[in-house]
Amino acid sequence: MILTLFDQPGVAAVGLWTGIHLLLTLALAINVTRLRFASARGDIDDATLERGVRAHGNNIEYVPFALFALFVLAQQGYSGLWIHTLAGALFIGRICHAHGIQQSGPGLPPTRVAGNVVTWAVFAISALMLISGFFF
Image (tube, rainbow, N blue to C red; front, top):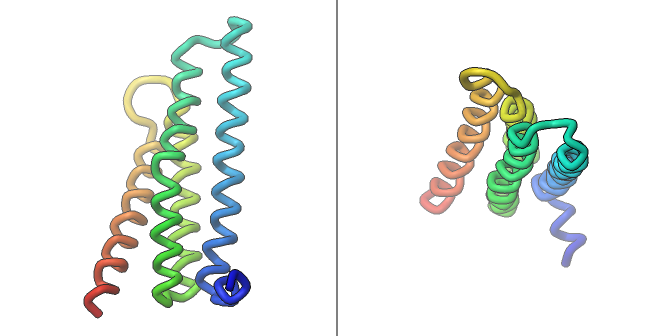
């Protein structure tokens, strides 16, 4: 049964991107650990640690839902191209957001805003595709 699932190009694409997003999540988790050690030594302030924690947490809040949506889209027969496009955009958006949220200074960093916009666009497009799949 599992082998037949992965014979589908869309599902295989979701598998690839799930692995890539897992590596990003791992990198953000390792960054939090690094920042916690630096904070314990007094090398950084609490705000820097909090930004690192939020970068990881925000990724955890968005990525699983998006990957689940992509898996369902693949199961509905959407091509690997659709999956790669949406998952690649999500990855770029998440990297931009993770970078931007960890920046200090006044205002919202452009990468943080861009990361949010791209992530929300992937959510909106995926949602519309899933909903329209019910009707068409």
